[in-house]
Length: 69
Image 1 (cartoon, rainbow, N blue to C red):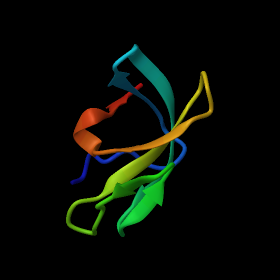
Image 2 (image 1 turned 90 degrees about the vertical axis):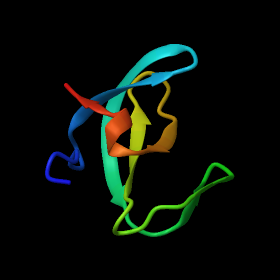
Image 3 (image 1 turned 180 degrees about the vertical axis):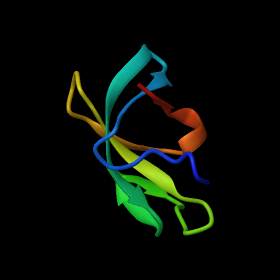
Image 4 (image 1 turned 135 degrees about the horizontal axis):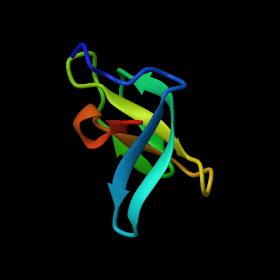
């Protein structure tokens, strides 16, 4: 996907508490466990590790869930 967010870019995404803003930390292209959650990332199905500006919490999201700022 050519429109994937890049590390360092500012993004926003929806959570159960509303919209959150933060930055992309890295692109995940291999399975990884984050905060006890197993992320099924692969080169064909990458996910993006993002860090919340408000709380500093990190989570993985697919590119379609992230909106560049």
